[in-house]
Length: 54
Image 1 (cartoon, rainbow, N blue to C red):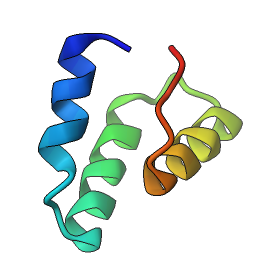
Image 2 (cartoon, rainbow, N blue to C red):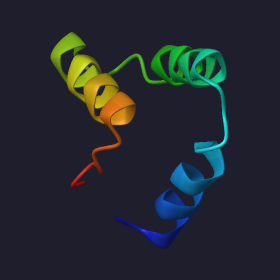
Image 3 (cartoon, rainbow, N blue to C red):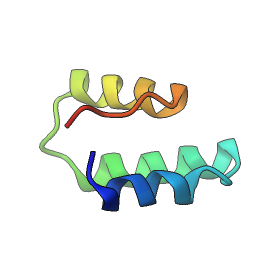
Image 4 (cartoon, rainbow, N blue to C red):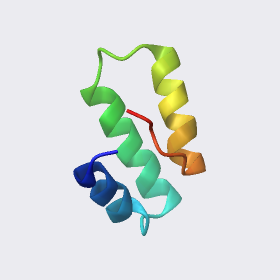
């Protein structure tokens, strides 16, 4: 994981669940090239706090 991504993850930690959901929706809309499976996996990782290995 890059330092930039680590900083981004640290920055969202204080967000409320509603704010995290809104952010996730924005990211999903911006990345329309991702498959539904990829999005589900990323969403699960996000909400469980699992780092993305990419």
